Length: 141
Image (tube, rainbow, N blue to C red; front, top):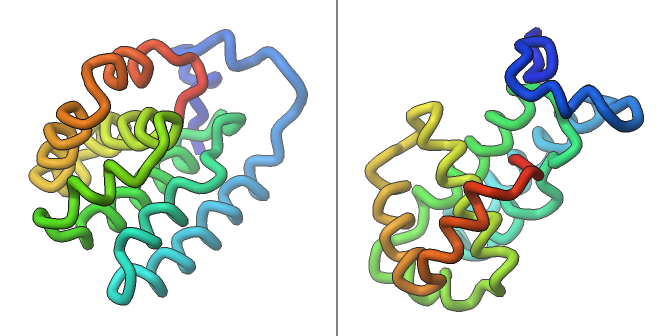
């Protein structure tokens, strides 16, 4: 399994304490199961659950992509007519985190139509600053 540090794309990620990648992936998988249980009954709650505890400290592309797939799955369940109210109910940090996940999921071609619709709606609510924060923050999802 490749990690970003092994690829040399992010050499600064070699810094810091050792990371338990198995535990981080297990946490993402548990979140995936929780989101699957919520997605049909309460998509907004599923999105909140999907955004919980992002694997910032992970150095594994697999873990980060798995986490992005969980968020993309929750986004895909939210109806277009409900998207604005779901985004408006989020605080600024949740909106910035959602933007990070949108970009991560777009990089692996996860449901790009729904992601681009959410991107547009998120920018309308949170502004372009949300995009800047998502792209410039070193803590990646």
